Image (cartoon, rainbow over all chains, first blue to last red; front, side, top):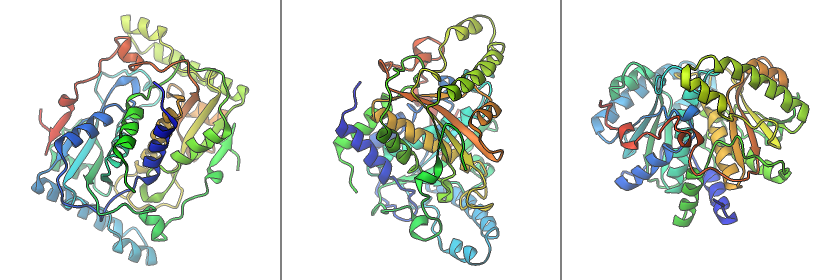
Length: 214
Length: 214
């Protein structure tokens, strides 16, 4: 199956215009068929040994969202204490999630025991199943951007809080909680870059040839 | 920035036609500007706290490739012993990498200390930096597919072997070694599905609403 130049450019356009959305969610609902497309795309991410270790918990219920928001607040308050001086002041001003504003949440998990103990490609690197679920996250994120939907990854929450709010079994690992929805706009640049928190690194400093060079 | 329906469909086409390539690499070289596009796309993956924890080691040298291949063989021989009976016989027949055939290898790593000890969004979940590097892997993979290039993730190799072959510093974690090149063809389905090793799971079994349901 050949991908044309125009199709290639559409993929790059989507990659470059993807953002982590926190403050720009609109309350408009998302059609179920759009959600179905996102989930099916994520289900076509690569997985080690074709393990497909992911599950998807779609959250629309406001009470459940509030419980996740409460879990965020706990971890966020802990985090505030970890930054010092000016960084702490800036940290406190940042909007870091849109859990209750986004019409949809999707939790992507990893079932580490799916398909048994021995999995092709995971024999030397046990973390490969978690990495597969992360590939599903990024695939869903790009598909959502292609649907002009914003996605925000809420990582400031403890696994236990997510598991309790979503009734996730003990042996399942939460990998990501994503807020998804239509947005007022997409930022031109990542917000932390815009806020002067962190610059984009020059790519040439990150590329090495045939071995690590310092 | 609006993504049109045609552009959206190009993204889905790329997602659905992405494969893990092992046996179909051609020896044709890849233009440096194509490699530069892939790396720049990967550098625009999401990262926790805009940490950009990745480095990219581009491998063209045959001696280095051979050293990585040797590392694969060690881990592959260990893996063979982990499968039993018929599964072991099938495992032995599978082509699981194209390290020396692919014109390019790219190792994507994670510098866990980049931007300091305390990182926004990584306070409750320390693995978020590794997950960011995985997002770079999947972004590069989709960009490569959009360039009609095959990518194969070699996970059957110990970190130590990769670090030694590529002179990777002690504190840097190898996340993925990717083989990249033009291909004779892309398989219509994942090879492990085609080989009857593992079926694709029905998506509806993997989707839950407002909480995990069994």
